Amino acid sequence: MKKAKPLLDFVQLPPLEKVGFCRNVSAHLASDPVFLNPTVPLDEVNAAIDAFEVSILNTHDGSRTAKAIMREHELIINTMFTTLNAFVNSVANGNEAILRSSGFNVLRQPVPHVKAVLAINYTEHSGCLEFDSARIDKVVAYIWQIYMGVLPIAETDWVPFKTTTQSKCVIEGLTPGLYITVRVAYVSSAGTSDFGAPVTILII
Image 1: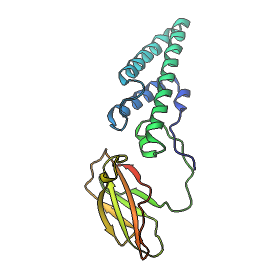
Image 2: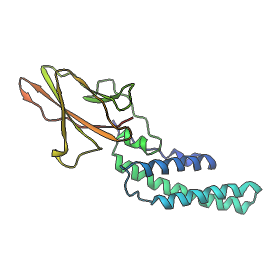
Image 3: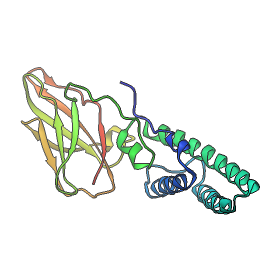
Image 4: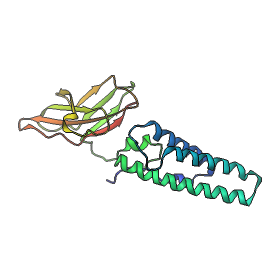
């Protein structure tokens, strides 16, 4: 399956809708610490959005010159946000939760018909998540490790969370707005497996 990626559909938006969309993306990038040092500085982005909005308002008198100026500002905006789209795509590396936190729309991926090896599910309570591993034959225990963030740099950054005999476990008391990454290993008569691929989710 292809990785999830942010869409460039904003290019087709009408001018005023594009202004609102771009302000939303800029605000998301500014508030999310995972998007450090965007390839286009956000103060330049916001100044360009302001200039674009003014140029739109100036077209209300029907002036051809004003419309030409607006199109020039729109081209600047399209170029800036195409560059930011590539930046977000690079940071997220296919992680749909991170992509959605950027404010860009995300290409929907086909839903697999088999259960994921590891899934993280939201519950009805804020700050509470359910970890759900695929059931593996002859497994007698599941070892869960967590990392508060997108991906740890060092193996020692992983924190043992819980060992369960069930393929599901729940963690409570998490801080909304942060990311958590989870991985699981299996214990069977053959021994303890390596930890599987980690999964990251934005806490809500």
